[in-house]
Image (tube, rainbow, N blue to C red; front, side):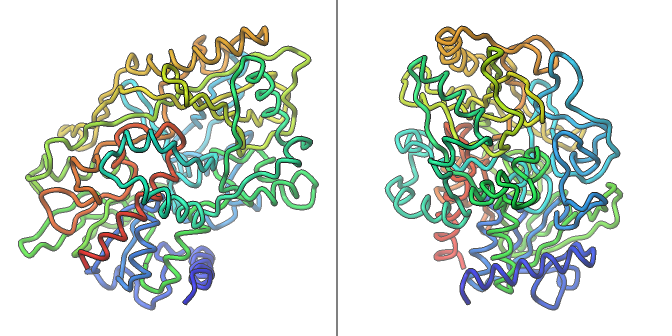
Amino acid sequence: MSLSRRRMLGLTALQAAAALGLTTVSTRGASAAERPYVPAVVIGSGYGAATTALRLGSAGVPTLMLEMGRLWDTAGADGKIFPDMIQPDHRSMWFRTRTEAPLASILWLDLVNRDIKPYAGVLDRMHFDEMDVYVGRGVGGGSLVNGGMAVTPERDYFEEILPRVDAEQMYRRYFPLANRMLGVNSVDRDWFEQCDSYGYARLSRAHADRAGFGTTFVPNVYDFDYLQREEAGEVPKSALGSEVIYGNNYGKRSLDKSYIPAAIGTGNVTLQTLTRVRSFRQEADGTYVLTTERIDELGEVRGVGEVACKHLFLGAGSLGSTELLLRARETGALPELSGELGEQWGPNGNVMLGRANHPWDTTGLVQSGMPALGIDNRADPVNPVFAEIAPVPAGIETWASLYLAITRTRERGRIEYDAATDSARLRWQESQGQPGIDQAKAVFDLINRANGTSYRHDLFGDTRAFENRFTYHPLGGNVLGRVTDDFGRVRGYSNLYVTDGSLIPGSTGVNPFVTITALAERNIERVLAEDF
C-alpha cells in the first residue's frame, strides 16, 4: 500500500474518532484496552515518536502510541478547532486559569493574556525555578504550536554536536527524507517581495542589511500556496488570522496531517489519547510494563491501568522521557541506567527580543504568523546567531520588530528527579543564559546603531530587553552515545529506546524539529534491521 493511501486511511480514522468522541484511534478492530500486551509501545506523538510509529507500523509491527493530550480534530462553538492569539479561550493552555504567552505585555499593559477555564489545552508552559519550557499537548506534540520553520542545521555544527553520527548519510538521505515527509515547502520569492503578509519581514531585512547582516529564506511546513490564497481572500484565514502558538486551523502541515495518519493507515498502529504514562518497569522475562492514567478533558482521572510490551520507545520529549527514565532509576525499577542520565540539557540558546521602529517604519496590520525569513550570522565564530524574524500578529500597528534569536553557547543544565514530588526538576540558572544574550546583543546593537533604533523594553512584563527565561526548544537529558548507544538504544537494558530531542546535547543552532525527525528516521531504520 502506498504511503499516500495509508495517510488517507489514517486521516479517515482520525476524523471518525473525533466525530465519535473516541480516545482510541485505529484502523484495526480491537482497541488498546482489549489487548494489554503489544509488541511495541511508543510514548508521545511528537516528531521522534510519530516517525518511529510510522516506521514500526510500515514494518508490520503492532504498535500502541500513547499521547497525554487530546486529538485536536473537533471544532468548538466558534466553528474552529483552535483559538487565535488575540482572543484565546480554554483550548489554548494545558489546565491553566490564565494564558501564558511569550509576550507578556505591550507598552507595559496586560493586553496579551486572558483568564480562561482549566482544560486540556494545546500549549503547556512548564515552570521551573529559573527556566520555563513550552511544550505542545495533543496528537502531534510541538508541531501543533510552533512556527513551522523547517531548518536543516549547518553541517559543521551538526558534526560538532553529534560527532558519532555519520553526517554524510544524514545530509544525503535522512534530512531530505524528513523534509519530504514533513511536507516542507518554500515561499514564492516574487510573491514575498510584494505581499502584505511579510511586510514586517522585509522591514527587518532592510534594517539588517544596513548593518551588514545577511538574511536567508527559511522553508516551512505551512502551505505557502494556501497563504497566498489567504491574502487574496479566497480561503479562511489561519496564518493571517493570528493563529500560531495555540494551534493552526487550516494551512499548517503538523504531524497529525503527515506522519501520524500515515502510521495509523498502516493498520498496525493504534493511537490512544488522554493517557499519561506514570512509570514503567521491566519484568524478569524482559517485558516492559507501563502504568498509565486515563484522564478526561477537564483533568479528572478516569482510570489507572497497565500495558505490557517487548519494545518500548520513549518519545515524550526532553523533559518527559528524561523524567520517566530518572524515576525508573531512582525508584529502583531500572537501577542500571546511566549515571549521565539528565545531563547536557539546554534551551537551544533561545533569546527573544524586540526592536522599536521609527514611526514611518510600519510593520503592518496583516502579518503572517508563519515566519519565512531569518537573520543569518551563523558563520561568525564569535557571535554565531540565527534569528527568526518573528511576527507580532496583534491586528494593530505596534511598530515592533520581534525576533527569536537562536544562539550557540556551551552552557548546559541538568534534569534531576525529586522524590518528594515524584517529578523531574530542571537545574538551570538564569545567569547561564547570559552568553546567549551577549551574542544576540552584539548583533542587534549593530542593527540598532545602523538604523537609529532602540530595543523595546515593554514586551516581557518588566523592563528587560532580552527574554531568556523560557524556551520552545528543550534538548538533551538522554544524549546519544552516552545515555544511549549511537542509535538511541538505552544502555543497560534491551529493547528500550529514546527517540526525541533528549538525544541532542542542548543545541542545534537552528529550530530543531527537522534534526529530531531525521535522527529518528536514521535510528529506527537501524533498530528495525537489527532488533526485530
